[in-house]
Length: 268
Image 1 (spheres, helix red, strand yellow):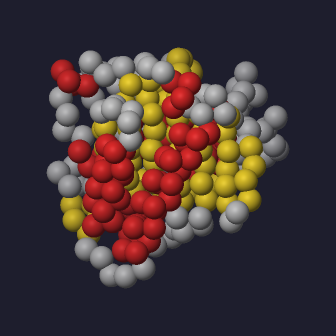
Image 2 (tube, rainbow, N blue to C red):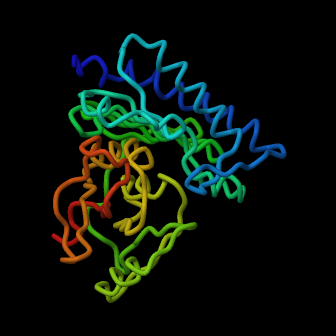
């Protein structure tokens, strides 16, 4: 992979534009009545998911990169085929469908480029709040909001009480058990991949995800966290310990293990 050209500002500007345009297509549906369907796994699906998916698939296919594409809405690609990929696009055309249906604004468009099992480029766009996060391993992590652009990084040290991001739509007993180690904390409720992004920009200290997610849910924001100086590490519930960094496309299942997103000062 000639990753230098694909990790430079000029290229990621194209991906940013694709994410923003996909967000506009989502908003056109968000602002009217829409139908909600149920997928095989009982998770919700809307016409906005499909409109964003089709647009992103078409736009990425027109780039000269030539990489395969794995999307939440076209995920039935065999492990036999996927394991031959060294570089590929991993997208969630509408992350936070439950938040979309609730109309609370906390949903995103996620586009990531995975190279050798690691996210090397990530774009996360939240259309309701018109906020764009993007990063590559070369240019660092950035946030653009209402015309304002700034480089972002994780917090230098945790605040007191520790600011812990929690899911707005998914809670687990494991999470409650994990939080017992902190004598003083406050929970910042958030939906979609924005949970990782608020850690990346230093507005939260920790995001424990002790519940199910898929690889497309995390990849783009994971790239942002990495470039902002944070880490996304696998959490072993049996030993109550952190292990290695989260990776992608290393097994047949597309489910992530439990993981912890943090700045470098948490639990060191």
